[in-house]
Length: 249
Image 1 (spheres, rainbow, N blue to C red):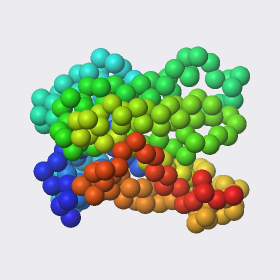
Image 2 (cartoon, one colour; image 1 turned 45 degrees about the vertical axis):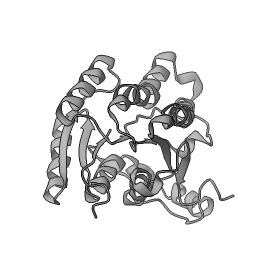
Image 3 (cartoon, rainbow, N blue to C red; image 1 turned 60 degrees about the vertical axis):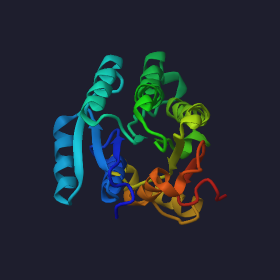
Image 4 (cartoon, one colour; image 1 turned 90 degrees about the vertical axis):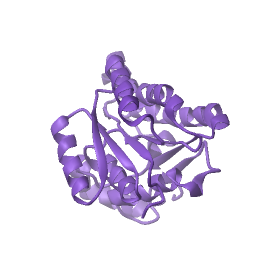
């Protein structure tokens, strides 16, 4: 498919998991995909895997928690590609701890990666996006609902949903849309221990409409759609991809 042919997409956190699948989906639809991450070896492996399937990719190494490194990466990207058409803010981190064990430093670390970095990337790269540019923030159903022992992550994802709406309002006059995709429970390598937990599987069988974990490839269509011409009049929304978790009770 070539609906995104001739376009350039930056996907953060693209070395593995959901980010890698999103990158693959954009590449399969014709986009040149810039794979971002912190580990060069991981990115090189991802690039080889995608390129073997006919993708057009390049690599951008940066620690998004480092303001100077992020600025350098943005300048390098603009210098090499002249700008981008799509920005997918997928990189994120999690620190599951109860409130009395989560100090200010740990909370700030979550904020830096999950909320400040997406803001900073949009601030620096949106001037180099054309009319018709697309920004997709990967949030979480945790941005809308909550559980005990995860306050920092939940707060950052709720903030990213709010930032999505604010950026949609601010950038709409330039023809740039800003939306979010909120994954539910996905069976990624990072969640391997949870996937193996029978109690969680039982919970999902009762709590979600589809009664199961999501497969990483099942997130891709939502992101590709929001980047496509068919989504040109959609902005400021958060689309849950959760097997009906938010809808089911």
